[in-house]
Image (cartoon, rainbow, N blue to C red; front, side, top):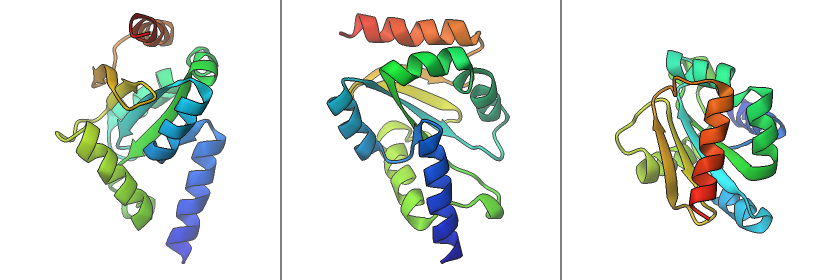
Length: 146
């Protein structure tokens, strides 16, 4: 009961901060809103480069401004600490995303998808660039795949 409540609160917090947790729902939204999906695989409590990516790029106002009009953000998190464990339902969703898009278990691993789930671009590891450069890369990938 408490685990489910924590999972729901975490899910609500992520969605309220622009992040979604369910790829199928995100795909439906992307089709409806004519947007693309940025799917990020992270280990939020153990993966240093994942934490850096989130703080330095994905939470950057310039990136978020572009994302707000262009992207549906999806996070597939794989925490290791017991206190951060996901609900069974969320873990099942994340495992399904990993089976389809990250079978090698890389972290961080970020993909740009179209509204049908087709991979347009992949960032394997921490993109060692500025938030502005990362934002431009996303825009360019979308532009070249229209």
